[in-house]
Image (cartoon, rainbow, N blue to C red; front, side, top):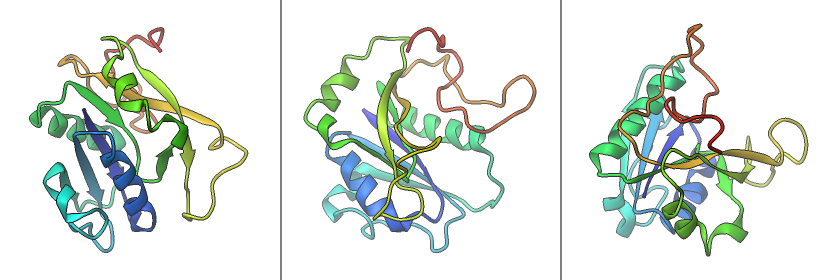
Length: 173
């Protein structure tokens, strides 16, 4: 199980979200998108976990979400991912799932997206969105890796806010 995580100047929460993921995934790939300062091993997770974390640098300040997510997916495949977990650096899984999440992901059927509730930590580790679009959100969480899956702009060229990769039927949630 490999988690993929885009991050942009999110050092304020990365220590929490990365360490929480490392409790149940085998590897974590972070795309450091033009952060200031850049993410360094050991700053956000224990040195013992450094061999399970890959940090990819993306210095271009332009946000190209589909290109970034595809780059993360390819890195996860290079690590031998059978299952891919998608989580942004400012998202945190609800704690009640921790005891069972690894088994839930491992038993996700092929060609299915696992959507789970996440807590949005936007702007401060001390706050979360209690209402509005970011509150009580279910997000694409995991899927069984399949070489036909990819991220790309949609047919109109829109390249943002598309959590699930192309190739999975929306009916399979």
